[in-house]
Amino acid sequence: MTTVTFIGLGVMGYPMAGHLAKAGLTVRVWNRSEQKSSQWAKEYTGTACETIAEAVKGSDFVLTCVGADKDLIAVYEGDDGILAHGKPGTILVDHTTASAGVAERLSEASLKVGMSFIDAPVSGGQQGAQNGQLTIMCGGTESDYAKAHPLLQHYAKALNLMGPAGSGQKTKMVNQIAIAGLVQGLSEALHFAEQANLDVKKVVDVISKGAAQSWQMENRSATMIEGEFEHGFAVDWMRKDLGICLDEARKIKASLPVTALVDQFYGDVQEMGGKRWDTSSLIERLRKFR
Image (cartoon, rainbow, N blue to C red; front, side, top):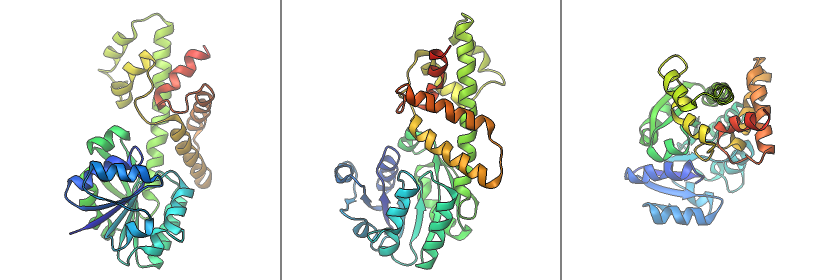
């Protein structure tokens, strides 16, 4: 039977690992907080491991979903890390949203020890992870992707190989750039409707039937109108992602004026105390500074 290790049991990794266990795979988990690993093992059929070395030993696949570049380097390249203790032939799949540079670095390091690496950031948020409806953007070789594809399908609604190592991360950057502009545009539209003394819910009902329609409008406009911001991806994490986008843009000489501006706006939201609000909270900034 296929043995799978999942490292990183945050709001995304916890349910993703759960889908693998529900599919009948042999799953081992490791998390920086041992309590989270133990909790997961009680909820699902699987093994909570005390060390990364224990978790990855003999595994066929190792999946990771951690915080940022520095966390990935620690988990993969540390003395107790994946590369030091995984077996040759292991397929490594990383779901962290990180830089393309670290994906390329880990791909090269994996090859040197006889393993393979796929960068596979996800979109769909906590709800998508819980429902097994994530969009996964992969970077790696076709042969490695073909091996990992059946595994990733357990929590994916869309799954594509975008190119060589780093391509998954670059595609996720495109995703975040598009979202940043859309949310700011929707925030300004709703704020304008409020200031114009229109019935904002009626406005949304009308314009959502035409060219202005978007996922953000369908899924976030109602809570934005009510000032509820506990329904999605946190501002702190969005700023991390936009920082990655802007760094990559400088490297490849891409111009991202709107993204850079929205990143600053999210900085304002953080200063307002909205670090853990969801990304639709941009509207609250407009309300405060009107």
